[in-house]
Image (cartoon, rainbow, N blue to C red; front, side, top):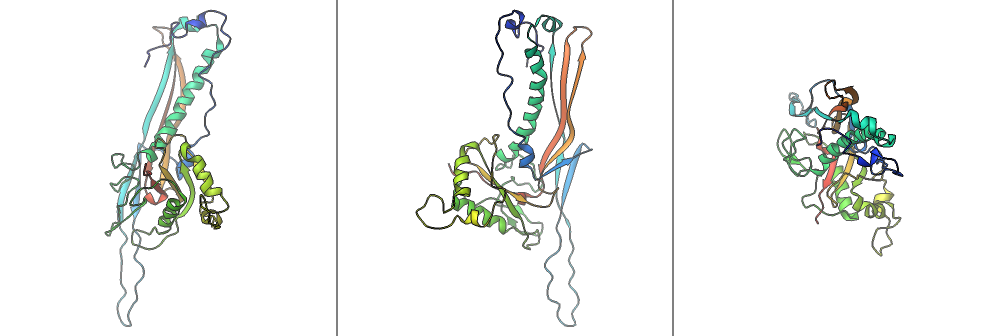
Length: 309
């Protein structure tokens, strides 16, 4: 990274005649990270912890004259979200400020700094999905990758939030994912209502997703059959294109689970801007700092497939 912005950074800005400047004023995507997580939380500590509570088994039959069976709910695994500081700034020499003839160049710097911090939130959040098939990224406390076939139950056994064999997005593979989500249970094995909300795909899969979800009849067949996913309203929020997904074939189903227990974004410190001047160099200084973290407590909040190609 450059130490400071001097007259050599924009030599054309020292002389009249430049019609316009470009490259630093593009439109940005809408805020996507908030649509990826299942809950946005504030934080007032260095880290936040979310702990599993197992609940009870299904009530058994009590034989006549027999005593009541007792069960104990226990603490399961703990997920910790450690807030991280992200900071960036720039320094402009006294000479550059005095000699730059183009206000547009100077004014664009603060906007570019804000954009840089917005990108940090987008990329860090999306990387939970991008790296969600590898256990090297520990965002969940059960020791597994976010998307795994072996999420452990406290009392033994396991459950999956991905298929045993990953498949590219198709009507059939999406139906398989929806069926898997419908089969989620509690830690003690009781069926629960986890409702799929929307499909999340990379930009390369957008039109495939549109055909699968919006066709009146079954997609890509000559059968005179209804589009069952559309007819049943299985994905009430449709699909979303995430422009920060790096695997073109990966796709995900975001599910509706209790707030504060799924894929969470903790905002410890919003983006805070500051400026000052260096007495010794006379450089003008500007900076922005923020603190946040992301974590997953309950992997039932998502189903994921890395695709097969």
